[in-house]
Amino acid sequence: MSIDTDRFRTLLTEERERVQRALTHLEDEHPGSIEDETDELATAGDNHMSDMASATLDREIDYSLEASSEQHLAEIDAALRRLDDGTYGKCVVGGEDIGEERLEAMPWASLCIDHAREREQRG
Ligand SMILES: [Zn+2]
Figure 1 (cartoon, protein in one colour):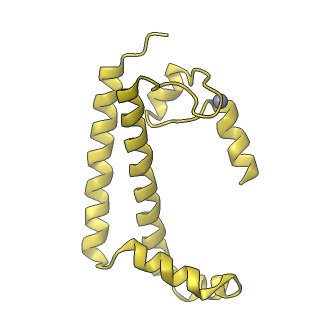
Figure 2 (cartoon, protein in one colour):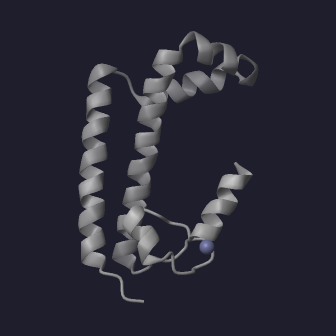
């Protein structure tokens, strides 16, 4: 397979900067680290999760946005590492080619479409 890794590295670097800027913006609006919030949720216990979520819905949306941005950054970093070690473009589960079309749409993709669907179904 011939993947233009330089091009995908550029795409990933640009995406990383974009997410980083968005995160910085979120943190400016809501000082306090995401780690503190995660601890808070963990100690609250499962039974109270839904009450808490509705009571602090606005806050939750911002934090979940921040959390998903953090997760997205981690995905991008992992993809950049795979570029470095030469495994970029391979499914991390089965080692299949992810496919250039899929990588064009999501350069940070770590799973082939089959394994991605399987993971979604499991929730
Ligand atoms: Zn796979």
